Image (spheres, rainbow, N blue to C red):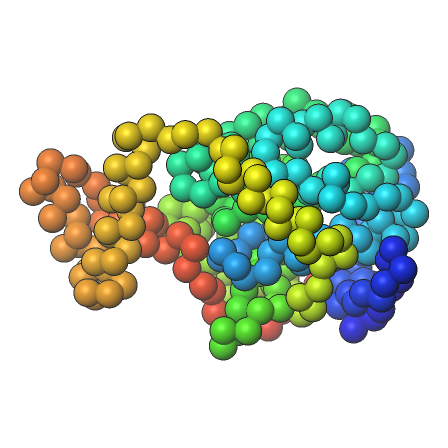
Length: 284
């Protein structure tokens, strides 16, 4: 691990990741009309937010730009406003603060923002990081054409601090093969992998306060949204706790006049499930 100074503190970045950022990403952010968009996904409480903040803080320290709580956006309107008002070489993080159906609605707006503000992001040479449960929630434009790469955050033996990276080519294969069933294991090898430390480059207390406030102010979901979420939870319980095959769950749903294919059942069950990571190598 290599250390860097940030706001009077000492922080660490994975050596291989630092090398790739120094050689490829940061030089691109100094070029005319060039931005860098990354997706960071993973299970809830896997550490994806703190990894994203560490990544943003390192790039900000090299480019000598400010990075604080105002660079971390938790709803689409704040994200749009930050991009529109950002200064050159700023880091802008969208850290999803909603779950379930609310998350899907918010991410449809994120997809739109990435299209609408493409020119502004390039002209200001922004580093934009999208943090969410899974890349499969993004549409093809955002996931395949706007995002330079994907960092998938995971736990190893219940320990946080691990990531695997998919570059543009491997991300394309992962998205096209894995989207139907939310399956990360469809790729035999990730591009490369590394570790991170569970340390916040901004005030952890203020960050948690901001996230809690965002939860409190989230839009109400409809009754149909609630029922759909309950249905999905029930399917996961049937499959994971009672070991019921997806074909049997399909039959149960048909009897209740809620038809769904076994493939779709597997996709719902697979969402947010951990991934076994194999060695890989390469560059950003």
